[in-house]
Image 1: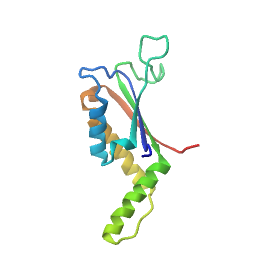
Image 2: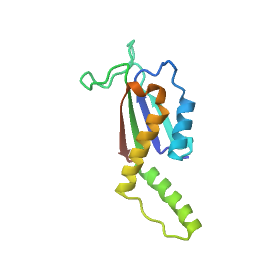
Image 3: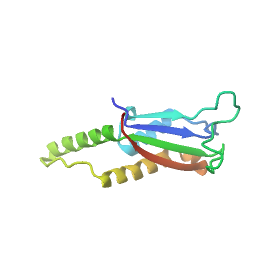
Image 4: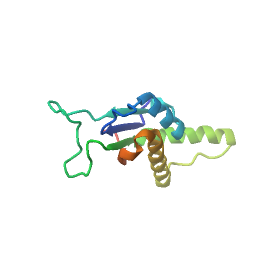
Length: 138
C-alpha cells in the first residue's frame, strides 16, 4: 500500500499515559475511514548529544512539554485513493466519477485535524498545533 499521510509528532509523549502508537493509528484510521497502512507516524527525536527533545525553534512559541503535529499529505496518492474510492462507489450506484476539487482537500484537511485531536485525547491540553501540508514526489 502507498503511504498517503506521514504524521510527524514532536514534543513530550512520555505521559502519563505513555503514547500508544497502535491505539493512535486505530483511532485515526477509524475517524478517517482509512486503513491504517495508508499512514505512517514519525516522532521527532532528541538532537544528538542533547538531553532534551528537539524543539522546532526558539521563537516558535513551542515548548518541550507541548505537542506539535505536522501532517504531510501525498497529493498524488490521496487523489488516486479518493478517485478510486469514488469510482467504486459510482459503479455501485451507476453514477459518474467526479474529479477531486480544492473543496475536497479543505474538507479532508479539517477531517484530518479533527481525527488527530481525537486520537491525541490524552494529550489535548498540551497540543500546540496541527499543520497539514500537501506534498508531491520529486
